[in-house]
Image 1 (cartoon, rainbow, N blue to C red):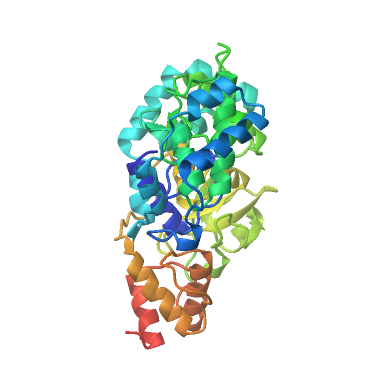
Image 2 (image 1 turned 135 degrees about the vertical axis):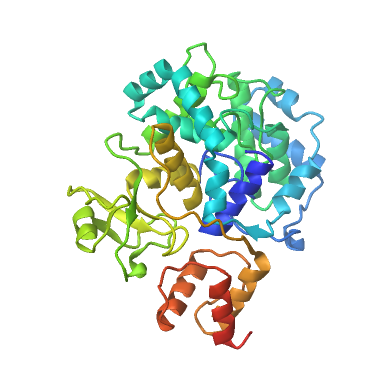
Length: 431
């Protein structure tokens, strides 16, 4: 996920409010990682380390031994270890712009990636069929995760995982989390699935072709090729088998897809769309959505079954509309970003021969953090948004936007663009 991928995931988090095996967000939203939080360019003084790194590292060595990690592994991985200033820099960096849905999707699901993925599906047909029989996850989804995460194994990152995690544990914003991941990485080394030299990944510690955090590796990685090692770095069977095991364990429903692109009727009540990342605000049966005039994107009727779905509008009422199912939320467990989940699901569809989205393509311009700050200040002045503006358009900001839209006779889709920001400024007296 690294560098460009890291930036892309950060954009997705900012643009869509924001979890798991994957690397590449400002602080990663990879498999096994907690929800990203905001950070300032430099950490508050009160969070600066209280002890020198050698003292901290000595305590880490002792704790590793108490956890049962061998002396040889501890010595090889931690002796002569130094902080990585580049990791500190990346951890403190905030993207200046929030990405738009279409620009994110164009980058994640390009025609080149689709063609490459289809070729790899053919090359790995026997493996994918075996994995589907074992885990009940269609191969096109495994390829989609692989493609979005690391461009099918080409962008896995070259940071030393142990060094990155030690740096973040000592000098990062979430020290206890990364300290735990560092000990999990040492446990992996102790199991001899990989050696310290070759245990590489993103700056935030996400590893291999699947971008698993060490804790996720210990829970879900499998030795699919049965060579005695769980190798998500160089073994395609192990990498894809680990993703399949992860998805199955977290509740993938092999009988259903992830979403359907739909067409909304004129004057549809946009407040029925979910603004929360997990899409749980308004869940209805397909029959209920059909009764509201919702149709498939091609105009056909929704299938009248017992399934339930939520509506999401990633680019507002004038953009594409999706009814999302339980598997959408399973994708979110890998990376808690709506843009990411849509990209994985859509890439899987295209790899399986699906058509491009029918909604009109409108790339739009990314919003600056300063734009979001102005929006939040205006919403706060109107009494719609409590708290201190932070320049991140999260769930609370979008709910406040929806409230503003309702009061002012606008479609309450919670979508933010420059026109909406100008309207808030005018109403709040901040123009």
